Image (cartoon, rainbow, N blue to C red):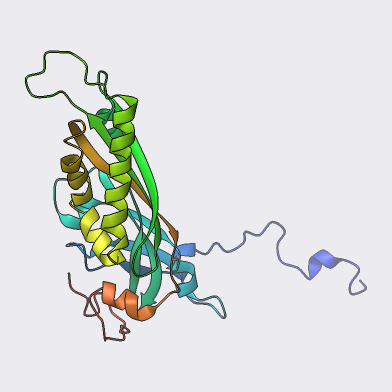
Length: 249
């Protein structure tokens, strides 16, 4: 038989199964670290394909967003507040994250809305001292006066405007005078919401005044020094293989 006439003789068995390789054998686990403002620094682990040629593992990790409940970050009872943390750098086996936003859980927002009261919302774009542009949303509800007999507690449109103006004014003042680290420390106990509630008392009594959402619209140029400072390691260069690499909560 002439060589090359019957091509099947040179090949293997027809329909031979392709060798299946488990994709997880090519992946590594990395520890995700929250900034130093939070009590619980280890928020979990994340998976990424190992470095192969020009495709670096660190490039696959940067830009990932992790949504974590405040109860997990602070070991407290506030489960309805969620923080979004974005991966910005990889040091050894640790992924260093930065603040990327905050929101309330849907069930909490739904539980606040009731009949016989006025819902008042306000939002403002404000820049921190270190160059972050944030859009901050606030929500509040009117409540009955002490010893009130009337069933409803509706505010007039003019009162709503005054309250909205105060909300914007307080949010702008509280955020524009501090850096991002300080903003996060204010958002954890929601001291801004309590401040708004006190200041608006003279216009109309309010309750459940909360910072509903914070969005990061613009960020300053990435600075590794600033990020390490946020993680409580100002002068250290990070590095180091292993798991916890000198970063304790």
